[in-house]
Image 1 (tube, one colour):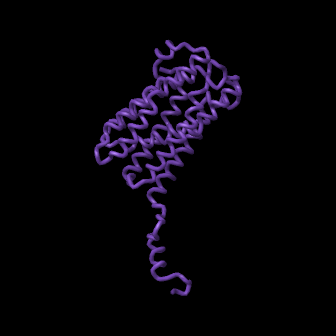
Image 2 (cartoon, rainbow, N blue to C red):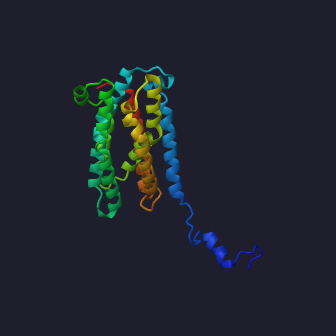
Image 3 (cartoon, rainbow, N blue to C red):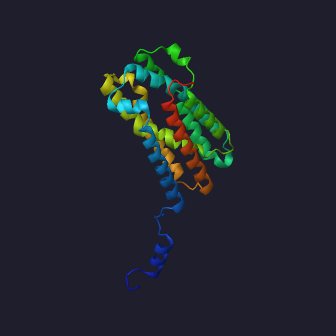
Length: 246
């Protein structure tokens, strides 16, 4: 026994971090989550400067504004499951777990635009006009970037895009839905798309967190994830800012 009452063996285990049943946080993984938290904080600050979101917060929006937001979001939402599926197809067998996760995620996402379309029609919008719409400048940039990233071999950086987009759904979409309801008196079936994503994306972010803290993510992968998250955050803000600009 040592003078502190801890055996030499236990002391050695504690110093090397090999105590049975306990695995200390790895510095590189903690670093990735901290870096992503910084990206998210910057993203939130930029969202605060988006005109339509400022108007929503102030209670100065109309049904036409809500229709306009849905119209602009729909064009990019359609592409979401497509670039995720492309990313899945570019993971090799050494990244089979990431391929499987991407395939499952694409399957869950590929009907999302239908929820949005129903909300749009429920607030008086034309389905034909919605489906004939074009991506705004930000949506074009975002979709173009994501298809480019998803086409890379083993596109692990796309996890950064999912961190931003799924985080937006989990943390912001429900808040926006309730605020539109408060200001405009909308029914639940008119904000289903946003409300649904609060719960669905919260589940997705839990799965994503497990991947981000796994042995799968090395330093190179972490750098790619952070870079993609930063770019997507900027482009998503551009999408929300450049409404109807094509």
